[in-house]
Length: 325
Image (cartoon, rainbow, N blue to C red; front, side):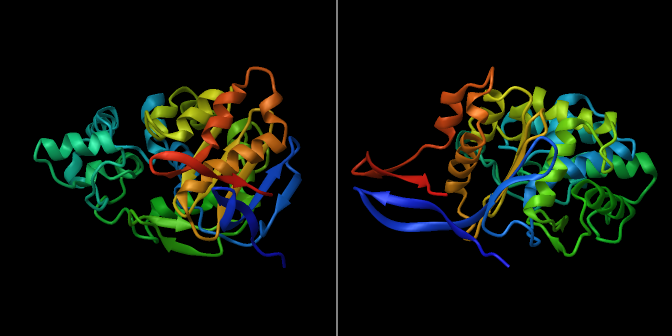
């Protein structure tokens, strides 16, 4: 069995002072593995990269949200005001409010949004936590189906059982491990190949049998149309999706990232150390290596910019973290 390999170098003043180890897989348009580095077939915990697939399961259960709110159900949002307003709208549509959320209290991910909260004498709250859009959608799905809301995070809740079934179908793999994510909801394992396969199916608007499914299309189109709702105004994921026509993508904790294109190509990656800083560097290189930057309509400079991570010395760039696979 292969192991994670060096995928990035930490270079300061021309000296390689460290490395990031990880794994990357790229699927061809037909869904076969085009190329890979490291270990891409063993189970990982995709963290928040699971969210678009979880959202698909909820759409299959009857959840009917406006596109921007469906994008928010897929999100690790920045806690900007439009995110918070959207979460409240999802809850209100189900006759609920933020007191029903079981996300752990937190500040916004976005520094400016966090500062606004603190300056207003605000505190950590469940609705500001980056997963509150997913949790609001879970609650709304429970209400729609007549399921209890007090224990919606439980692994054996009918909502979570349905999500696990959809997840296994879309990845094409059995769920070997069910863990608990940082938000308290169940977290399902998949290999990087399986994760890329699930995103490919979403991007193509198909189900686990590769048959056309308008519900997959709904989720993918929500992400395409409202990338700021999936992440935030200042996030690299938003920039990347805006730069590649028709792309969908979702980052997760522990440096997980999945992206799929409308032609069927898909990518998934993870680093062993989980460092978030290197995640966009690796994805930009994967897209370059597969020729995506040369495709018509792609803003290649914007994609490259998401993968540039300068290292500072005295406040000025003296090095970089660069992909090396």
